[in-house]
Image (cartoon, rainbow, N blue to C red; front, side, top):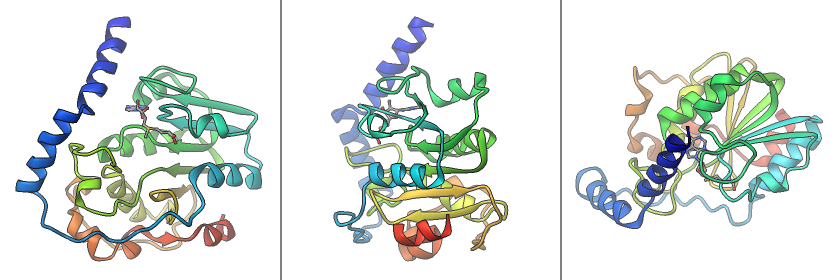
Length: 238
Ligand SMILES: C[S@@+](CC[C@H](N)C(=O)[O-])C[C@H]1O[C@@H](n2cnc3c(N)ncnc32)[C@H](O)[C@@H]1O
């Protein structure tokens, strides 16, 4: 067990090392990037995730919080709630496991889950499914980093420090599910919002494998694809 955890840490650190990021940057530049301009999202005047998560917790009188991916506890330490659990294989939180390992033996239910672990479509899809299985009625799932501004910010494998990953693809997929009500809040690099209730703005988009969604599609009309709303609007519909 100790050896597995040790190797896990080493692999995560290696995947984020500067040299490897540079190699992937040139790979994306020459083979994948189509030179699309920055979208122009500007989050500087918006509320940040600390404010938004705490505000939702207070308004909904939530009692149990789960954060997947805690890093240096920038968010986790700020959250004031009766009961909080933080899962991260490397640092921060309260449980030193990957989200998959955690959910395998978990029996607890949560009111608010903040998904901010490994930012790849496949992992986020699993994190969403597992979180839905352990979400209390009227609970909420929030996801960080849903609004990349350009191709490189979302390209996988990761190729630069500022990175949202392709979390956005998981949001688009959930938007096509009639049993989930899904939004993206225009704040803090995009905060995805998933509610377990009938979809109020179903996205009509057909593709057999959402991991194959192209950035061009997102770039064309992110507001439509992601159902982007301001935090004030979100508060009204919660
Ligand atoms: C962006 S940081 C989290 C930041 C934090 N949530 C905040 O708001 O300040 C991502 C974290 O996810 C962790 N991580 C990577 N893979 C993971 C996995 N499979 N399960 C859970 N956490 C993971 C990393 O170790 C890292 O600490």
